[in-house]
Length: 123
Image (cartoon, rainbow, N blue to C red; front, side, top):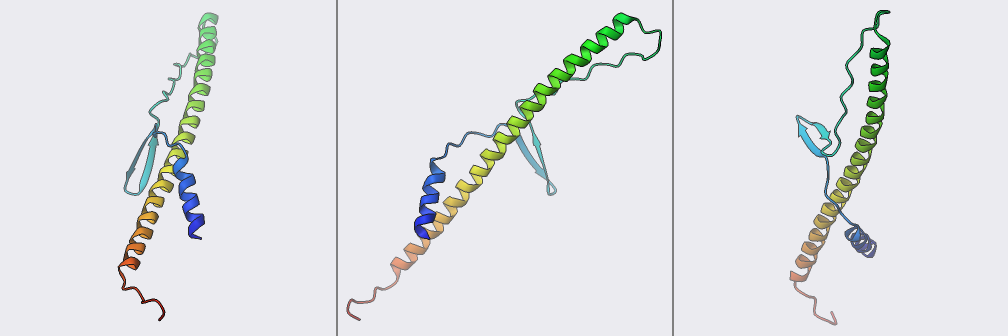
């Protein structure tokens, strides 16, 4: 069991750990994650929907909408990738920190054990 733990500890310590990109906050037990790399596009202004609206205005509105949709797809992809990266990074950070605490406790147990009087050989 101890060998498996030490092997797992070494394996996790070899995994690369990059920095978190988004921002995490917590208030009153509620967490919030905000992207620090992705900027949401602004929706285009609406065009009057009456029969008197000039064709050029409608064509411009459709073009603005299509641009907005493409920018929104890029934004959603960015958010998804950043969130996945942050989740993996935070998961690794938790594993690393827990492993450090476990290793420290095992070392403390060993020190405590080593401080006990030794049983003389042959008894």
